Image 1 (tube, rainbow, N blue to C red):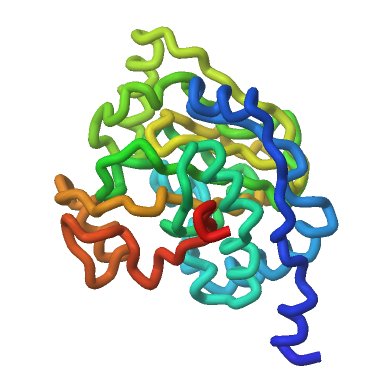
Image 2: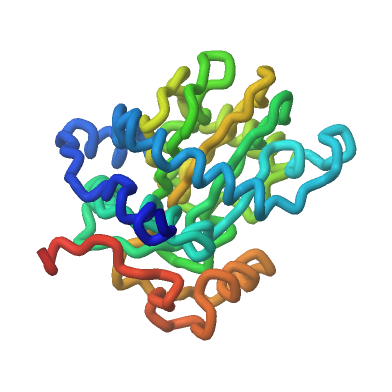
Length: 280
């Protein structure tokens, strides 16, 4: 069987997943929501080996865990897999997932920002408190991340931990993921009285969605099994690129919006339109 034939046989992931008004309200109020069974067990089983092989091929991390810094211990991180594999692209560009993102944010359509595999190794470290969007040169609250395990996640590993309602504060500070961000944002969360929420065990194909401004962290992996998670970051269609205010912004603008600059529509070839209500 040819590679093209194998890709054709992969699940299309086009059928809609209906979400309720309550789930939309919970997302908009808390900045995060858990949706069960966004992909079926059989759908995830078809894609997991492909994504895992892609991560293994592209991973350049070869230091033992004990020799890495906090960020390096947190996960193996591989971005824009959809560009590097037509099979992974069928997963990451899926209409089903994109429609959920648009529905939760209450926007007409969404574009790809980028996807990322986040594989937390056996006995890997925690992911410090942070806001995703401090890296992104976008002046908006219309960004959202899908976080989907490809393998069962036990209670002891669990989902991410979210500071409920923290997205309402927008930008808090420029701290990238680090020991410093963990300490400072933990104090901020306590000071503001935000509830810390985790969803516990998750099955393959369950997914959390969280806002780009929602402060979140993740525990370490105390097991001898790889925590395999795929993430997809969506931005509302029609957004414009903001003036970079940090090296992180400049780096992301070059990486995810090649050839574009401040004021341009956030719509490079790396940001395809994945769902639009108006084009249905």
